[in-house]
Image 1 (cartoon, rainbow, N blue to C red):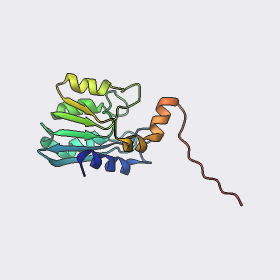
Image 2: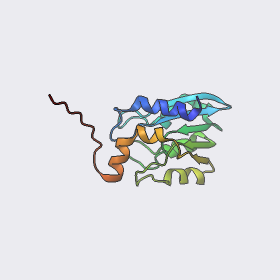
Image 3: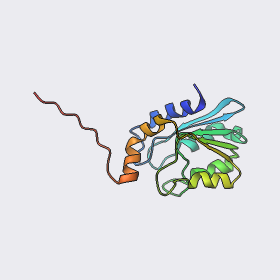
Length: 153
């Protein structure tokens, strides 16, 4: 299992608990060893990146971060994840997909790049989109994602 697959598995743990926020997984890797793991907590609590950085502690300096969605760069109920990533001394960030939220939409990666952090986007990971299908639909259309099951006799 590669590190992004691990992050995607962690994102799956957050499904159903994070709305209106996306379900995100994050893994901090230093010298090929996982030193921090995290997934998005309920609204108002830590995002995946913050959990992973807290677990990694000082080992985050110079490490790589694998995250399933572009880190947020705006102040909401919690501070921006980009600020914490920069302050932790992360050297590179691997992202499974760009956040379609207009408040983020490439701005998070831009902030990281301006801080000297290498960024890589792997838009080919369909699982990242599947995990956040409801979030993506709501952010891009304003409509909820609804699944209905009917039975007739």
